[in-house]
Structures are given as structure tokens and as C-alpha cells.
Image (cartoon, rainbow over all chains, first blue to last red):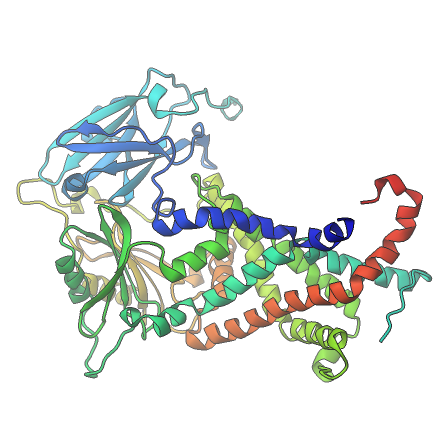
Length: 163
Length: 394
């Protein structure tokens, strides 16, 4: 027993590969490979289309090196939406116009994402607004309360604001 | 040949200690290190292995005709997949078919393989494919990504550091290491221990430059993910397309496919001699098409130059070329290209494959040597420690 341990303990790093075998089929089938994100919410209607919101990771908005409080969200638009929409935006708080609709959604048309700026103070009643503008000029909107859209709802760290 | 183990004499003892340190750097992780090295070695020629195995990725040209314009290539894919939205066009090597990423509702990252000479869509890969599978296994052990965190990525890239330390301690242990070049020796008739010892030293020394490149660039991948996770942008975001250039919404407006041949011409006017290898189409109505390429041989690889082209006006909105890069940008451009070894086409890929095989052999022979000898040396070195603290042993 002891001898076996002495001999085999140096091969234990092979155990990490058990995880690779475990995750392998999902990666090959695309479940992880074309990952949607975390905390995928039920699709909601935005005009004639459906939008599915998720968080890139369940974390609070983080301050980037440029001093902005940012959180990345993913949005899947239904197929017709992916083709019809000229641009789509996410914003905390209702946009006053389509010219200031927030962070533009970009990336793969079926796996859009946006890096959404957050205000220094926000609460569960604040809303994350999705604005989509089609090539034909129609504008559709929907919103999620942050209580729903933010898995980790807490005030941002205050240290960065001290001046 | 009997190996004498003695801790007597300070100088000799120190030499033995270095040997044990050298052994222990790879010992607890050798299986993982070996798998990462083998998959990396295969990855250096993954496209070529696919070329051998699957005719659909070949750029066959039996008629000996000129390659088609890029616009014809994407038109061919658009016709084959009317539901699809084309997001990227790439041709890693001239002997490979175009790989056209076409986003389909159920396969957002599907790639169509298109013959550059006939325009025929020869096949479609919906999942990662052979190269993508190897890439995932080698780079992050297929662990899942959450945002920009992946445990597997950190495990793999951290291997760069013990690898680097193995090089340093190996040189210390070897002492007259230049002998591997001046008097190379590979004893095949003196038993396993002598053979594997000679093989280990010989491969390690001749592949020293390669191991240094792989270890340093591997460690860089750890740092680069940390930088990326922090939100810091090594390459600033390309400029957005001015609002007045974007077609106004209206009854006749719709998503437009940029004129790729005009974009290439614009890029070539901005960067003389520019040869595109990958084009990513605008990822929103307000973004540029990005053309990745080179303008001749470059250690930055075949995608080391970037040109941003306005998809509506075919004007160049910006360029990123090695000559204008900051030190950090040079690092992040150069080290990955050196890691992959694709910068010189098939020639460097084959060199990387040979030295990758040698490096895998160094790891394997190191373990064989250890089981044949160092196990005993380790026990002898540790014995005095164990004798004074028996409770702490094992």
C-alpha cells in the first residue's frame, strides 16, 4: 500500500485530466463552446422578437482600469431579430432617445454581448433597458429590473469613489 | 553503472540538491505537462493533419485556375445558407480551403469550408472540430469559461514557470552543457539508464531555445488573461464608424455584406504589400471590418497586422502595425506568434512539431530517469531530515 502510494503519487496530476474528460463531451457538442453565459433568464418579447438575457458571469459590476463601472451582459435575439435589427443597446435606466440608448450589443449575431456602464449608485428597482432599432426604422424596447438582471446585487465598492 | 549517492562535501551536496530540485519541478505535474506538450505539438500541425484526413478542407485546384475573388467566396456561402450571417473569412494557408464562419440560429459559430478556386462549399463544421478540440484541450483542458475566467487556462499557463525553472536548474546540474553541442553522445548499447540520460540531455540542450520560447510565451498567456480580465485593453478598441456613414433606417435599408475585395484593396493602399489571412466582418452596424494579415515574413505571424476598414465607404479607419506598437503590444503580438510557430508557414510549423516532440520526449525521459535513479537520490537526501523529524515524514 505504502509502496504503491510512493510510486503513484507522482502521477496524480493526471487527475486534472478527469475534469477534461468530464467537460469534453459538452465542449464537443457545443454546449459550452457556444456558451450563452450564466443565469439565463426566460426569453421576453421585444416588439415582434424575443430576447434572452444572461450575465457573462454572476458578478457585481466591476471597475475597469479606466474608472468605469462595467458589467458584461449577453443577449440572444430570435433568428428574425438577428437579421432585421440594425443595432441594439443595453442601458441602466430608461434611455431618453435612440441616440443615447446605451452600450451597443455586438459580437456574433446569435450571441450578442455588451459592456454596460453602471452608475455609482443603483438598486434592485433600477432597470436594465434593451432598445432595438430595425433596419426599417422601428424601435422596440423592454426592460428587466436589476433585481432580476443582476445575480449579485450589491453596491459597488466605495474605495474608488473617494477623492 | 552504479550511482554513488553521498551528501558528504558541501559542493557535491549542493549539486545533488539542485538535481533533486530539478527533478521535483516536473515530477508532481509531469502527466499534465506531458499531455499539454503533446497536444501543443499536434496543434502546431493541426491544420495539416486535417488536410491529410479530410478532403473538405483542401484547396484543390485540378483545373489550375486563378483563385476567385473574396466576394464570390462569401456569395457562395450566402447562397448555401440563406439563414446564415457571415461573420468571418479566413484562409490560414494557401493549401487550405477558406473557412467562412457563418452564424446559424442553432450553430452560431459554424464554419463552411469553401474551395478558393471553384467556390464550392465543401463542408460545414458546427462544433469545435479537430483543431478546435485540440486547441481547447491544450489551452484550458476543456474547462468551462465563466466570463473571462477559466481555471484550466490558469493551470496550463502556470506550467510555464516550472518549465522555465527546469531549464535553469537543468543547466546548473548539467554544468558543462556545451558538450551537448561539441560532443553529442547517445549511448544505445549501455542500458536504459545511460540511453535515457543521454537522450534527456541531448534533446533538452538542442531544444533549449524552443523550451525557452514555449515556457516564456506560455507564462505570458497567464499574464495576458489577467490583463484581459482586468478590463485593460492592450490594443485600444478600434474606432466606431461615424453615424453619418451608417445607412439610415428606412423601408429599403437592410444589413449589407461589405465588399471584401474593395476592403482588401483599401488595406493594401494603407499598408503596402498587405496580405490578408483573416477578415472579421463588422460585429455591429457601427463597427469596422478588421483585416488581419502581414506584408511579408514577420515574427508577428500571418495575422500580426490589422487594418480597420469602414464597411460602407471602404475607407481605412485605422491600422495596427508592428512598427507603431507599444512595448506591451509588441509582447502580446510577438509571444503568441512564437508560441504557435505558424509565422513561417509549413516550414516553421514542421520545426515546431519536431522540437515539440523533442520537448515531450525530454519530459518523458526525465520521468524514466527519475524512476531509475533519482528516487534513490531523493530518499538519501531526505533521510537526514526524516531522521530528525520522524513525525513529519510523508
